[in-house]
Length: 79
Image 1 (cartoon, rainbow, N blue to C red):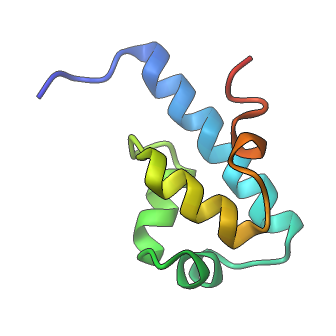
Image 2 (image 1 turned 45 degrees about the vertical axis):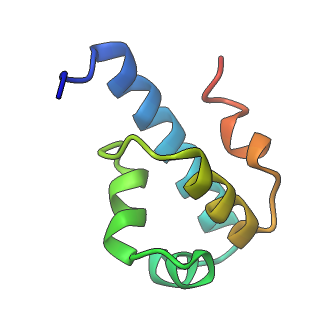
């Protein structure tokens, strides 16, 4: 499996920061977000730290659990 490029790592970190920002604004713990999204808490932590190359399916699951549109998770990430 190829290693992630520095740009990819930067993008993952930015995405994770956006998830954390929306999660804390919603007053949710990682555990509660994970529960609502049907994901493991450790997975959510890895996403927030930029350690995961998250799938589109899980982006939608997290967005739904946050009561947000998937695009809201990518707003700063795409810049």
